Image (cartoon, rainbow, N blue to C red; front, side, top):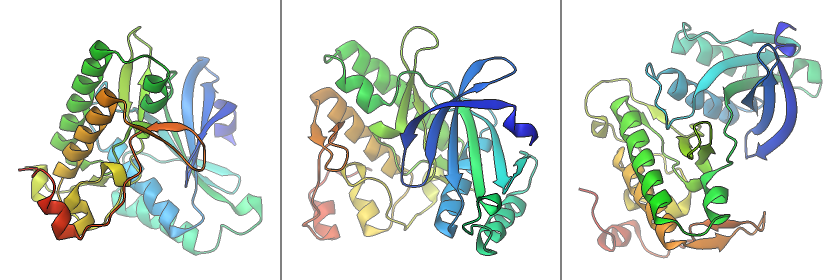
Length: 275
């Protein structure tokens, strides 16, 4: 296993619904990296992993405020195979779907299928933890707003709609002294194939976190402007320090628990339009 000696796992730093993130070291240079491992045991996980891969690898010119993908590795049992950017989308997609559906996810760990994302390491944690561990700071808020706006504009110019912007999906790096935000977690993102205005593409899948979802997302007919809505909610929660306590983790989080008692048409009538 050539890839086994390339990285050394140090510790687990995060765990989500479909992946685990580790702090690791690139053994050749001793530099830190973040490694996300996704178990491709069901089609849904495979699809989420692929959406993240296509979003990150499709960006030809890296942006300072978007997490950088160093490489992606497919693990099939004890075999580790780097996924080249030269692969056609259909080839890699069919490869992973076939691997999953042919039953190689059996209980035998030698047959397990994983996708490993090697990314830049962010030493400041996520934006939620970073802000809530500090006193309110208008200058810091302003800096984060500018950086996030620049990142979302960059993604949209490159035909990428994130669809799950929230403070937990924004990481903080201190590499240059001052905190730099990094938009991450592209599992729900969509890469639009046609060029032009990204807002010409329509989406129907209601996805994301309730507090950050635009009214039209609940209706199942929305565009990339839903990312702008989520960005505005992030700014609002950041400035006003709107928080709630998560029932599972007991952590304090930026945002609030929202209820959807209104019909979609009523929600639209009671919200500011995005146009």
